[in-house]
Every structure is written in structure tokens, then in C-alpha cells.
Length: 219
Image (cartoon, rainbow, N blue to C red):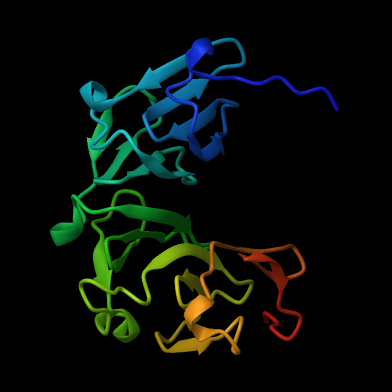
């Protein structure tokens, strides 16, 4: 398979790539530690602090069903509406300037975002975000956030899977939280880097390797 490498020499914002998104118009968005780039197949357009990006490090990218692009950085989040020109800051209350780890949109249209040590949800792309209470996160110590969230995915039954640095959480539709140890013999080394649910409803986890939980079923 022939591959072509792109770098800052080609106009990319930086050579340390942290996030990728192909949007509904076919543009490739590339988050890096030194800015954001959009590739149209021929050239890169780069966005930085002067364009409204709150921090040069981009951690997360999402396009919602309305075509809005959500951008999470090391110091807050912004959105680019369907015109693809203007960045607008995202109000996350006390965590508006915090590290944004990830976004997710569930089938009911709700938008979820992890900022700082909190989980937020909005009814849709035009609604305000509100803090979602997760008691397990409230036990985090400021200097030792054992359950800091890194990744989100929706199960086929509507439950929200939450990957943390100390294992896996399952938020049921009624708001209850179940904790699942991926490596029960090593609870201090149970960091979940990414979660995904396939078309058959199976949960896949990137851990220190790739894990599949065949005992977990969705609906």
C-alpha cells in the first residue's frame, strides 16, 4: 500500500498529530500539538491562537449531526459552525479553560464533553452544557485524579461507556454508574485509552494493547 507522508513542510500545523476527523464535506481535520489544520486534498489551511483556538494543543475533534465541528484543546473548547470560518468559544462553566479530553454525540442527539475532571452534556448543538454528576469523579484528589476520563462511547442500548485512567465505567440510562475492572489483577495499571462499540454491539478497548469484552452485551 503506497503511503505519502505529510509534515509541517507541506503546511501541516505540526508534526506531532493528536487527533483526526474526516467531516461530511470530505475535509480532513488534523489536530496537532501546535495547532489545527484542514486538508482539502491539495493543501492545508492552518488555524491557531489568532484564529480563536484557545490553546495550540488539540486533543479532540468531533463533527455533530448539524455539521458543527467541535475542537477540544489543552485550555478549553471551541466550535466551528457549518460555514467553516469562525471559531466560537464553548461555555463549560468553571471548566471553560480546562483540558478537554474528548467529545461524543449519542443517538438521541445529546453532546457530551469531558473537560478538566468533569463530564458535561447538552441536549443538542445549540443548547447549553450542564455538569453531569459522577460520584466516582468527586472522589478525585486534586493532585491525584484517579478517575480522570480519557474516552467516551455509546453502547447500542444507550448506556455511556467511560474510559478512565483507573478502569472502565458504565453510565446506565438511569444515571447509575457501574465500575468494571479491565485488569482486575492490576488495579493501579488499568488505564483505558480508547473505547469503541462495533456494529454488533461489542465493546473494544485500547489498553496496554487491544481488549475485547465478550461478556458485555448491549440490548
